[in-house]
Length: 167
Image (cartoon, rainbow, N blue to C red; front, top):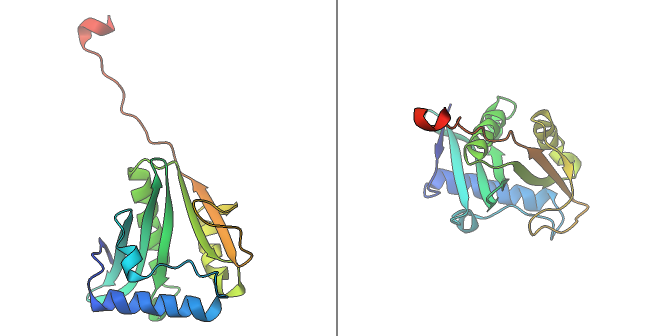
């Protein structure tokens, strides 16, 4: 599987994201859908990745920059035929690595609190995400499950002083 940054221009991505939005509106009460449409995902504070098996799109995920120390996971979706085949785990690992590379100390996410989202909540919990309250511009919502994960502190390279200053 190859994960690559995506410009959100392909028909395959557009179709997967529309399927995601349609599904969220089917299973989530009105006013509680926080999935972003294609245009909102093109925001400069969001980096979007797609996952491919050869020429076949198998999933996607995004990272939204909240501030200098934190980000939010958005738009995690796996194509139905690839459910339970490790796509979401690989995407999540990719996003976690990118968040650490950026020096974020914390990641957040919002997913559904309904039974249909149990697998997603379980995946995030396996990766160390814990329940938290609303963050950023979210309001408390009984249909939302908010989660967070502290990331390892970014390691600083040892400071090397010139020989004349270290003696």
